[in-house]
Amino acid sequence: MTDPSNERQYPARPLIGASAAVFRDGRVLLARRARALLAGVWSLPGGLVEAGESLAEAAAREVFEETGVTAEIAALADTVEIIRRDEAGAVSTHYVIACFAARWISGAGVTSEEASEIAWLAPSVLGGLTITEGTPEVIAKAAALIGIDEDRR
Image (cartoon, rainbow, N blue to C red):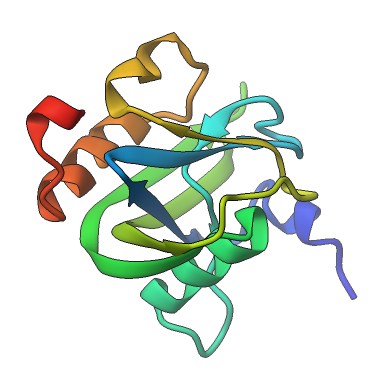
């Protein structure tokens, strides 16, 4: 079996991922990445889509695997593409991530091998965090989709 961490660097094709902005009482669930390449950076829980599962199924599965939270996927909020090149110009990373708006169903949240910390935060306080690119914009779109009042953000 190949090491999946190596397949993520210098991929032969874009890797498809799914994540979810899960809201509970106006707060969004964030996970602090425990593994390289983004160890220590906050992001929405998510990961790669497995063969045979839909994007929404992947998002719900990843949220649960990383945080122990069960979520109802409501709608696609945005698509984020992350393309990075090395000094020679070769594509070192290429992800296409379907980001969903979701509602909390159950689970307070727990850490895992992939999430060293989790937090339920008001979207208005994300500015001080080291966070993955595009995440604040995705959270704003997801909040609007599921009717999180602007005053609660």
